[in-house]
Length: 433
Image: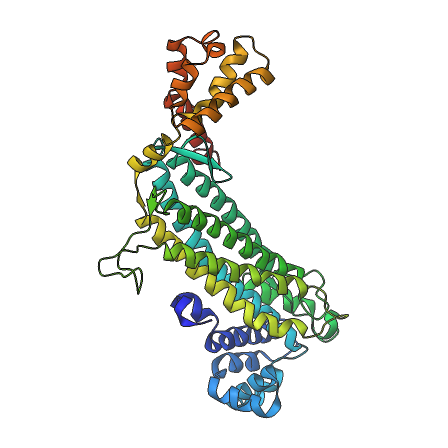
């Protein structure tokens, strides 16, 4: 992953240093388990644990010769351990180490991503409550529909990321798998109890049947979950990008002192963070497709998945980690313009009340079809003449016949659209866990 979109804590998980450290822990735990079962000498397991050192540069040098990363690692371990190294990797195959290590790296990554989402949720909740009843226009197809509130927008985002948090925790559980079953997964050369003991020590579950690899449907589920989270990030980013348009300007990304918006036009203040998040979301989603294609391996294993996972493992998690942090900072510093939101709400002269007028006419005896035609006819006059909707309706005899001026005044009240906001917030923020 390029440094521009990488944060240190997540990046560290995917370093060779961390990878080989995990490999050693798997191997050492396997030796400890075999010693407990009387399969290798206890003293040998102790020496392996004490002397088991590795050097990344040395492993890389050996790999250039042997063309096999696990063998290079084991060779380097043996150089440091001595004769007892003959008990390392006993009955195991490379996939046991590689797959279990990948599980641990994805679990480590999940822990960071879970924390990222929890932090985002706190920020979204704060914004939801602050703008709970700050009225604005709701849009469908990009066109004014009916009034809503800015707080409800944020509450919707909060609820979506609560679901994402649940999904990610499920995906973490799905991938928290240890598989030490040996060649083609039959445990022919390794006692199944070794897998059980190592899994327990490394806080993993065991794979019921692993062939020679952990089934890749687990990984497909994990990366697909990251893709869903990325899509949720983009939904928020697109909303902000629209709200920051010059013609709308109900919200705006914070613009730092000294920041420049355009090399050519000094007046520009662009939604660059939101646009960046849209691009990053596309990348995270793109990693889910090869993960899905990795499910179909040949027979008990092949390595067509290996090159894919060496890329998508770090790239997907590092990119999503960066995107979640960027989104949290964006939302935290987002500038809201309530006055402009109210101005935009009034822009069409009250057309947002058309459904209320429609329903009132049906309550006064008109069929829905006749009421709809009557309201639509007068709404179209507003589009054409620029008069207010209320003024247009007061000039319509068929409306005045059913609805008097006082009732019409009551219909044109924004308070009507706020009456259930508290109830919605109760469902979003006060539901039983």
